[in-house]
Length: 412
Image (cartoon, rainbow, N blue to C red; front, side, top):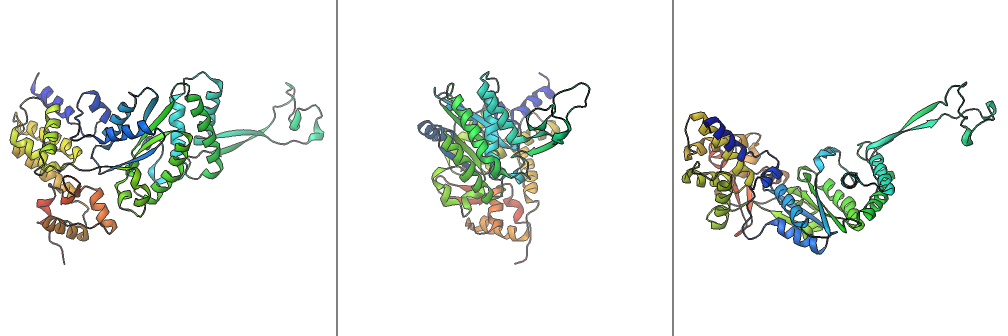
């Protein structure tokens, strides 16, 4: 293997933007210490297959991987069929409203049973597609009934090769996914179609569970709350269970109490003086790079600068691998990590306002952080401030950002 091929393989192993399913398929998954959220979700859904659950965590905390692992765990149960669904492939988040998730669930079920030969099943699939995407109906234009008595009912002339065909006009029926559509008129029809399709599905799968990803990108807590209390509760009543990757902001919004009992939190891993978390991160690096390519001091440096965020660990490592190749060296060393950590921190600094900088400085100096305003939530959601729950709850500025904020002067 030549040097270029060697480094390409290393880069591919730490492709942070890659599909998490590919990482699972390549054997890169490492079980979290003290049990994974995926196990908890699978156990709860095994007991109550039609229940609704929210999976909350910062960007890059590994929620998608946990959904995929939970799916695989559930599919080991004989009477459950779990399906992973990326909702971002169906509708823009800015256009989501009550009815949108119901429509996406309908399409997921239609896809699941598209090869069924049952006539009733195919009828419900067509109905779901029409209600979700819309369709065009061609209606005959009414004609003078006295002009021709030789007609079908409703005044439609009989086919006659000597006369022109009946004139029609197109009537467009907007689908639920159309942002201008009035979902209220089609909601009950879609519920009925999904219910009938699910009844057919029970012949093969007694219980269906959907794992809905990407909803954590939905920034409006009110919209998210409505989607859960309308669409997903309706799906639950039909008998279908679900897990939703949810926006972090929902935990700190006025809707928190409404969802507290069904919320599962995927926090950042506390890698400061925490042997379990450090060992977990070391194992992740060694699973993807099993040789001595990453020096020991660089391993601990990568773990430190990741802040305990899984995606940051992967991205920093890949950037450091690129740095090694460019500098012509053969092993990943601590100074490579320092270079990419500085660059990562500069990127994190972009867009930070003076008010937010004051908050960052306060957290860095005191470790105290109160969530009161949208600025506070924004700093948390963007991972500029990290929240740890174990072994005790604490807050910290992202390690790549902390050295830089002391260099920035802001007016008091």
